[in-house]
Image 1 (tube, rainbow, N blue to C red):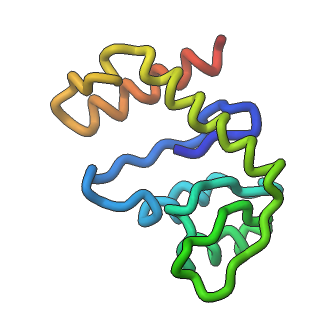
Image 2 (tube, rainbow, N blue to C red):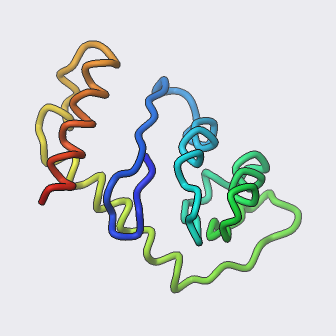
Length: 123
């Protein structure tokens, strides 16, 4: 899920539950052109994600994993804004149908995510 600085959704990409989120991050970042900063947690600290962020001309605010040889210095004050992403997921889960995943197919679940995202944009 890609959200803007206000916590509003910009793009949603679904994938299998057992797949790491960083594998879908490159697809999400296609819609992030014009972004000044890209905030994410340590799970997104991969070379592919960092290359995509550099390609769109944004600054990386992703903490380095422990096993990374060269650790990046990030702005901790800016990294605190990542909670807007977590709050957006919390607002999504206020809708019972999404929280309990009643939809059987990925397309109907994605449709419901789009519908709820539109409702949250209108609030």
